Amino acid sequence: MENCGCITCDAATKELYEKAKNEGIETVWDRARAMQPQCGFGEMGLCCTNCGMGPCRIVKVSKDGPQAGICGATEDTIVARNFARSVAAGAAAHSDHGRDIALALYHVDDKARIKDEEKLFKLADEWGITVEGKDTVQVAKEVAEKALGEFGKVFGNLLFLKRAPEKRIKLWEETGVASEAIDKEIVRVLHSTHMGCDADYRNIIRQAIRAAMTDGWGGSMIGTELSDILFGTPMPKKVEANLGVLKKEYVNIVVHGHEPTLSEAIVVAARDPELVELAKKQGAEGINVAGMCCTGNEIAMRHGIPMAGNFFQQELAIMTGAVEAMIVDVQCIMPSLATITKCYHTKLITTSPKAKIPGATHIEFDEQKSFEIAKRIVKEAVMNFKNRKGEVHIPDEKSEGRIGYSLEAIIKTLDRVTNTHAHPSGTVKPLVDAIKSGVLRGAVAIVGCNNHKQPHDSCHVTLAKELLKRDILVVTTGCGAHACVKAGLMSDDARKYCGKGLATVCELLDIPPVLHMGSCVDISRILVLLSEVAKYIGGDISDLPVAAAAPEWMSEKAQAIGLYAVASGVYVLLGVAPAVTGSENVATYLTKDIESVFGGRFEIESDPVKAAEKIAAHIENKRKRLGI
Ligand code: SF4
Ligand code: SF4
Image (cartoon, rainbow, N blue to C red; front, side, top):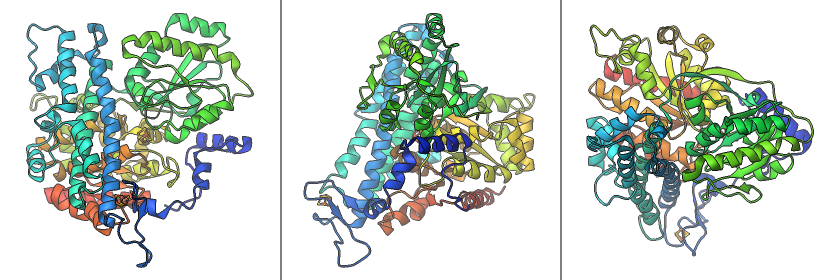
């Protein structure tokens, strides 16, 4: 794809970016421009600050500069250590999220707060928890305790690793990446990358994989499963997306961040008749809640709450002048929000002790008093309605899509075309049949963030369209999912982008060609789906004609996701190169050699059209090997 020089392919974003320019308000794109040229040492991963003798850097352009750190660490060691630390940070973020959800489940004292009892009992059974003679609350407590044990248990591997196909489990054991306790693996990365510890780049990456695995098959999976138990397993529903979901006459509350415990409580509080009445007294027509980033995905998937936008739209939402409160918890919240809210009436409300922002109002969220605190926060927003200043500018841009494709929802959808006289329902058979027959060539997960190094949303959308026309089904999560729903790819109309085979499958199953599977922690749903399909064909995940892509990734969490996907046997295409190019050995290992060990590898390709070609070639290659 030619880089058109545009910052985004999204009309609402363009419109508000222009507004920001006219009003002299600085945005992420301005700060990115001011940062040019970005430091080459950092970009290649060649800078080390791991001890007081440093900072050290390796000079690649000339042999006269330092070729090792003061301690003697080579470029391979420094690059691998930096990469491993980023992966550990990403895994820590997702896993701590999972821990908070497990704690929320542990503290449940009323059966009514468990929205998916069936899933709770299924998980209890999977984990060998006896349920006879116990009530739901007791079972929830025991499941939560077991989940919490995953973070610090002394012996044994992660429980969810057992969900993988047998061949994969064996491979993990043989290669020494069958992770143990979540916190332990993350601490080990920090330990082994301390000055004077591990200097073997392959061993450092092995430990990074162990940490990454505690994300996908640990913290993220715990987060997803327990969120479904607490708040309900997503099922297909309609949703509106983009900044046009904000309503001029309403009190607008944007919930942004990650953990559903906060946003769920806000959704309930915003429906409280007392608060709605109060909003009316302030001159508003009611209260409108909209979600941003992964919190947006969580509440959209479960309640159909409108999706205001993704990572690069958080600053712009405030510039509409229509947001009474932006309520945030943890992760991907730009500290710049505090500066921008000062130009408008918007209140930035932080709620987590783990993420405070100078200049924001802090109202600490406490799971024990969730409704009470949520009401207090919503009231702050309501009372702020009359403080609007200047003109409200909401772009007239919104799309509609169908979302809510949890694994359970996908299986239910597949049941519609299962001949129950001949085959049992509740399996992935129809999906496998479609892939085997070639009507569907394969499936790709498009995940990840926005990054100024790529035009906003454009790579997600172009890549998705390129795959659809090749009869490749797309599943998506995170900010990639926001991009796709905004571009109309989750509507029935999107069948026009599909090849004949995929269009027919969508029609038969009554699904959009891009399936929204949730937030970033919900990538664990994709792992389980892949495992189910691999088990069904009696193979391994690495046998499947599938791939993953993060065309606009930026966060450390995305690096952890990429690495656990590779270790799970998936080909992962990145649109932005991670900071590993300073070491040829590390870069070659991650993009080539690692495949002979795990069956998955990284590929770097910034052009989404070329990325689609590479992914399609990979898929056809897998099909050939399967003999289909
Ligand atoms: S650990 Fe080695 S390379 Fe890193 S800062 Fe210290 S001396 Fe320099
Ligand atoms: S996709 Fe990236 S930017 Fe978006 S919420 Fe997830 S980690 Fe944050």
